[in-house]
Length: 116
Image (cartoon, rainbow, N blue to C red; front, side, top):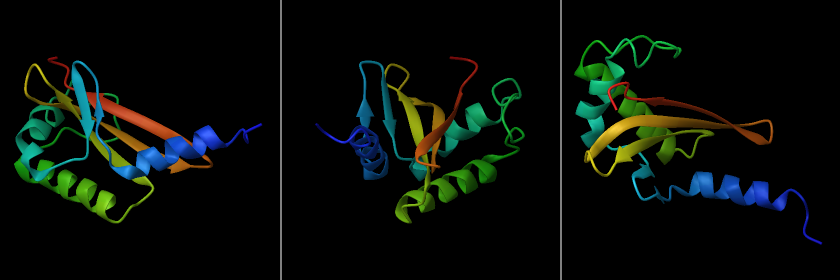
């Protein structure tokens, strides 16, 4: 009988692999600096970030700074990763998913453009 923890470990390995998660409508993928305009668009909306731990983005530099930190986390294989939520129909990023491996599990938070 397989060890009970194996599926959890497999999910964690997938989380750290950087693979793209593709559905019919959306793609979850690592961030790119080319996402800056989309990140600023949803991140600057008061209604979108209302319940988050950060204030609306004030300018494009803040969006680029967020992306730089997120990309660095991927490259350093840190416990926290940000995945961009790409809408295939709109052909743009509509939000992000942030996950942190902690205490043998995965803490997940997300933000999605309130205009979508």
